[in-house]
Length: 103
Image (cartoon, rainbow, N blue to C red):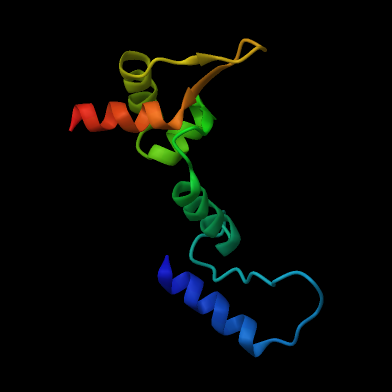
């Protein structure tokens, strides 16, 4: 990921400023994911606080791995929170604690 960020910064230095937004080039490694998408995923992982609440899908994306395996692990290892709308959410700190217990 460091290589992608370095390349973005090099490209920014070479381009004239065109406004308030930073241009994010698509380097073509994976057509379905732009550099911005990859960078957002990395930033999300590194900025989650233990008190952040995540949906099941967000936990799966953040933890990584096969969705059915992570979903089953969540059900048996982490106590969910109940959102007022009935949605199931998880506290990120609880997910990390369960991972530590399993190590």
